[in-house]
Amino acid sequence: MTSRPRALVTGASRGIGKAIAHALSPTHDLLLGGRDQTALSALAGELGNAIPWTADLADTEALTAATAEIDRLDLLVHSAGVAELGAIADTPAKVWRETYEINVVAVAELTRLLLPALRTARGTVILINSGAGLRANPGWAAYAASKFALRALGDALRAEEEANGIRVTSVHPGRTATDMQRGIRTAEGGEFQPDAYLTPESVAGAVAMAANAGPDAHLTEIVIRPASR
Image: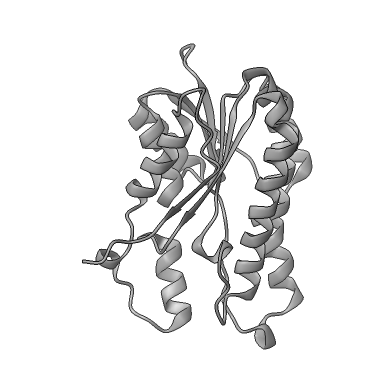
Protein backbone atom coordinates (compact mmCIF):
# COMPACT_ATOMS: atom_id res chain seq x y z
CA MET A 1 0.00 0.00 0.00
CA THR A 2 1.24 3.53 -0.80
CA SER A 3 0.57 6.89 0.84
CA ARG A 4 -2.37 7.67 -1.44
CA PRO A 5 -5.83 8.35 0.05
CA ARG A 6 -7.22 5.27 1.77
CA ALA A 7 -10.72 3.94 1.13
CA LEU A 8 -12.79 1.15 2.65
CA VAL A 9 -15.52 -0.28 0.40
CA THR A 10 -18.03 -2.71 1.89
CA GLY A 11 -19.72 -5.29 -0.30
CA ALA A 12 -16.64 -5.25 -2.54
CA SER A 13 -16.72 -8.89 -3.60
CA ARG A 14 -19.33 -8.41 -6.34
CA GLY A 15 -21.79 -6.11 -8.09
CA ILE A 16 -21.71 -2.38 -7.42
CA GLY A 17 -19.13 -2.71 -4.64
CA LYS A 18 -16.68 -4.50 -6.91
CA ALA A 19 -17.18 -1.90 -9.65
CA ILE A 20 -16.57 0.87 -7.09
CA ALA A 21 -13.30 -0.76 -6.08
CA HIS A 22 -12.19 -0.78 -9.72
CA ALA A 23 -13.25 2.86 -10.19
CA LEU A 24 -11.36 4.03 -7.09
CA SER A 25 -8.25 1.98 -7.72
CA PRO A 26 -6.48 4.65 -9.84
CA THR A 27 -6.74 7.22 -7.03
CA HIS A 28 -7.01 5.31 -3.73
CA ASP A 29 -5.46 2.48 -1.76
CA LEU A 30 -8.27 0.12 -0.90
CA LEU A 31 -9.58 -2.02 1.91
CA LEU A 32 -11.99 -4.48 0.31
CA GLY A 33 -14.80 -5.21 2.74
CA GLY A 34 -16.83 -8.41 2.66
CA ARG A 35 -17.08 -11.98 3.92
CA ASP A 36 -15.97 -13.90 0.82
CA GLN A 37 -12.22 -14.14 1.41
CA THR A 38 -11.61 -15.95 -1.87
CA ALA A 39 -13.39 -13.33 -3.99
CA LEU A 40 -11.79 -10.44 -2.10
CA SER A 41 -8.31 -11.93 -2.46
CA ALA A 42 -8.85 -12.39 -6.20
CA LEU A 43 -9.99 -8.78 -6.56
CA ALA A 44 -7.04 -7.55 -4.51
CA GLY A 45 -4.75 -9.43 -6.88
CA GLU A 46 -6.38 -7.75 -9.88
CA LEU A 47 -6.09 -4.26 -8.45
CA GLY A 48 -2.65 -4.50 -6.90
CA ASN A 49 -3.20 -1.67 -4.41
CA ALA A 50 -5.86 -3.35 -2.29
CA ILE A 51 -6.10 -5.79 0.61
CA PRO A 52 -9.08 -7.84 1.81
CA TRP A 53 -10.89 -6.58 4.90
CA THR A 54 -13.10 -9.42 6.06
CA ALA A 55 -15.72 -8.77 8.72
CA ASP A 56 -19.30 -9.75 9.46
CA LEU A 57 -21.14 -6.43 9.41
CA ALA A 58 -23.79 -7.79 11.75
CA ASP A 59 -21.21 -8.76 14.41
CA THR A 60 -20.40 -5.70 16.53
CA GLU A 61 -17.45 -7.35 18.25
CA ALA A 62 -15.95 -8.38 14.91
CA LEU A 63 -16.40 -4.85 13.54
CA THR A 64 -14.74 -3.35 16.60
CA ALA A 65 -11.75 -5.64 16.20
CA ALA A 66 -11.51 -5.11 12.43
CA THR A 67 -11.51 -1.31 12.74
CA ALA A 68 -9.17 -1.07 15.72
CA GLU A 69 -6.02 -0.39 13.71
CA ILE A 70 -7.54 2.04 11.18
CA ASP A 71 -6.34 5.42 12.42
CA ARG A 72 -6.89 7.40 9.23
CA LEU A 73 -9.52 6.88 6.53
CA ASP A 74 -10.15 9.23 3.63
CA LEU A 75 -13.20 7.47 2.21
CA LEU A 76 -15.82 5.05 3.53
CA VAL A 77 -18.21 3.59 0.95
CA HIS A 78 -21.15 1.59 2.27
CA SER A 79 -22.14 -0.68 -0.62
CA ALA A 80 -23.14 -3.88 1.20
CA GLY A 81 -26.87 -4.45 1.47
CA VAL A 82 -29.68 -6.99 1.33
CA ALA A 83 -33.10 -6.98 -0.31
CA GLU A 84 -36.02 -9.29 0.33
CA LEU A 85 -39.30 -8.29 -1.27
CA GLY A 86 -42.82 -9.14 -0.22
CA ALA A 87 -46.16 -7.62 0.70
CA ILE A 88 -46.44 -6.33 4.26
CA ALA A 89 -49.02 -9.04 4.95
CA ASP A 90 -46.44 -11.67 4.01
CA THR A 91 -43.33 -10.17 5.60
CA PRO A 92 -42.52 -11.49 9.10
CA ALA A 93 -40.59 -9.56 11.74
CA LYS A 94 -37.48 -11.64 11.01
CA VAL A 95 -37.18 -10.11 7.52
CA TRP A 96 -37.63 -6.58 8.84
CA ARG A 97 -34.98 -7.13 11.52
CA GLU A 98 -32.46 -8.71 9.15
CA THR A 99 -32.98 -5.99 6.54
CA TYR A 100 -32.49 -3.18 9.06
CA GLU A 101 -29.54 -4.96 10.66
CA ILE A 102 -27.49 -4.89 7.45
CA ASN A 103 -28.89 -1.87 5.61
CA VAL A 104 -29.05 0.53 8.56
CA VAL A 105 -27.65 -0.68 11.88
CA ALA A 106 -24.40 -2.08 10.46
CA VAL A 107 -23.87 1.13 8.46
CA ALA A 108 -24.39 3.27 11.54
CA GLU A 109 -22.11 1.14 13.70
CA LEU A 110 -19.26 0.87 11.18
CA THR A 111 -19.44 4.62 10.60
CA ARG A 112 -19.43 5.29 14.34
CA LEU A 113 -16.35 3.14 14.85
CA LEU A 114 -14.50 4.85 12.00
CA LEU A 115 -15.47 8.45 12.76
CA PRO A 116 -12.18 9.23 14.53
CA ALA A 117 -10.23 8.02 11.48
CA LEU A 118 -12.52 9.93 9.13
CA ARG A 119 -12.23 13.11 11.20
CA THR A 120 -8.43 12.85 11.12
CA ALA A 121 -8.51 12.71 7.31
CA ARG A 122 -11.45 15.11 6.91
CA GLY A 123 -12.84 12.26 4.87
CA THR A 124 -15.94 11.36 2.90
CA VAL A 125 -18.73 8.86 3.61
CA ILE A 126 -20.71 7.57 0.64
CA LEU A 127 -23.93 5.62 1.17
CA ILE A 128 -25.15 3.45 -1.71
CA ASN A 129 -28.88 3.93 -1.28
CA SER A 130 -31.54 3.18 -3.91
CA GLY A 131 -34.43 4.66 -5.82
CA ALA A 132 -36.42 2.83 -3.13
CA GLY A 133 -34.96 5.31 -0.65
CA LEU A 134 -36.94 8.05 -2.39
CA ARG A 135 -40.16 6.22 -3.26
CA ALA A 136 -41.82 3.11 -1.80
CA ASN A 137 -43.71 0.74 -4.09
CA PRO A 138 -46.02 -2.17 -3.25
CA GLY A 139 -44.06 -5.24 -2.19
CA TRP A 140 -41.00 -3.21 -1.25
CA ALA A 141 -41.94 -2.09 2.27
CA ALA A 142 -39.09 -3.58 4.32
CA TYR A 143 -36.37 -2.73 1.81
CA ALA A 144 -37.69 0.76 1.07
CA ALA A 145 -38.16 1.54 4.76
CA SER A 146 -34.53 0.57 5.39
CA LYS A 147 -33.37 2.81 2.56
CA PHE A 148 -35.49 5.74 3.76
CA ALA A 149 -33.82 5.22 7.15
CA LEU A 150 -30.42 5.12 5.47
CA ARG A 151 -31.13 8.44 3.82
CA ALA A 152 -32.07 9.91 7.21
CA LEU A 153 -28.86 8.50 8.67
CA GLY A 154 -26.87 10.21 5.94
CA ASP A 155 -28.64 13.53 6.41
CA ALA A 156 -28.09 13.49 10.18
CA LEU A 157 -24.45 12.42 9.82
CA ARG A 158 -23.81 15.24 7.35
CA ALA A 159 -25.30 17.83 9.70
CA GLU A 160 -23.38 16.49 12.69
CA GLU A 161 -19.98 16.04 11.06
CA GLU A 162 -19.70 18.81 8.46
CA ALA A 163 -17.97 21.00 11.04
CA ASN A 164 -15.35 18.26 11.35
CA GLY A 165 -14.69 18.39 7.62
CA ILE A 166 -16.54 15.17 6.79
CA ARG A 167 -18.59 15.09 3.59
CA VAL A 168 -21.54 12.70 3.24
CA THR A 169 -23.08 11.65 -0.07
CA SER A 170 -26.18 9.52 -0.62
CA VAL A 171 -26.23 7.80 -4.02
CA HIS A 172 -29.63 6.64 -5.28
CA PRO A 173 -29.26 4.32 -8.29
CA GLY A 174 -32.19 2.94 -10.20
CA ARG A 175 -32.29 -0.69 -11.30
CA THR A 176 -28.74 -1.92 -11.82
CA ALA A 177 -27.58 -5.10 -13.57
CA THR A 178 -26.35 -7.10 -10.57
CA ASP A 179 -27.02 -10.50 -9.01
CA MET A 180 -29.16 -8.73 -6.41
CA GLN A 181 -31.31 -7.26 -9.18
CA ARG A 182 -31.66 -10.71 -10.71
CA GLY A 183 -33.06 -11.95 -7.40
CA ILE A 184 -35.38 -8.94 -7.16
CA ARG A 185 -36.79 -9.56 -10.61
CA THR A 186 -37.39 -13.21 -9.71
CA ALA A 187 -39.27 -12.11 -6.59
CA GLU A 188 -41.33 -9.71 -8.71
CA GLY A 189 -42.08 -12.45 -11.23
CA GLY A 190 -40.42 -10.44 -13.99
CA GLU A 191 -37.63 -10.92 -16.49
CA PHE A 192 -34.07 -9.85 -15.75
CA GLN A 193 -33.20 -7.38 -18.54
CA PRO A 194 -29.65 -6.11 -17.97
CA ASP A 195 -29.66 -4.01 -21.14
CA ALA A 196 -32.49 -1.92 -19.67
CA TYR A 197 -30.67 -1.25 -16.40
CA LEU A 198 -27.72 0.77 -15.21
CA THR A 199 -24.37 -0.96 -15.24
CA PRO A 200 -22.48 -1.25 -11.94
CA GLU A 201 -19.73 0.75 -13.62
CA SER A 202 -22.07 3.72 -14.15
CA VAL A 203 -22.94 3.76 -10.47
CA ALA A 204 -19.25 3.43 -9.60
CA GLY A 205 -18.48 6.43 -11.81
CA ALA A 206 -20.83 8.58 -9.76
CA VAL A 207 -19.19 7.36 -6.56
CA ALA A 208 -15.74 8.21 -7.91
CA MET A 209 -16.96 11.68 -8.87
CA ALA A 210 -18.16 12.31 -5.31
CA ALA A 211 -15.02 10.80 -3.80
CA ASN A 212 -12.69 12.90 -5.93
CA ALA A 213 -14.60 16.18 -5.77
CA GLY A 214 -12.49 19.22 -4.95
CA PRO A 215 -12.50 20.81 -1.50
CA ASP A 216 -15.02 23.42 -2.64
CA ALA A 217 -17.63 20.81 -3.67
CA HIS A 218 -19.84 18.72 -1.38
CA LEU A 219 -22.08 16.40 -3.39
CA THR A 220 -24.81 15.64 -0.90
CA GLU A 221 -27.12 13.52 -3.07
CA ILE A 222 -26.78 11.83 -6.47
CA VAL A 223 -29.78 10.25 -8.20
CA ILE A 224 -29.07 8.00 -11.21
CA ARG A 225 -31.70 6.53 -13.51
CA PRO A 226 -31.33 4.15 -16.45
CA ALA A 227 -31.52 6.03 -19.74
CA SER A 228 -34.29 5.21 -22.21
CA ARG A 229 -32.93 3.14 -25.08
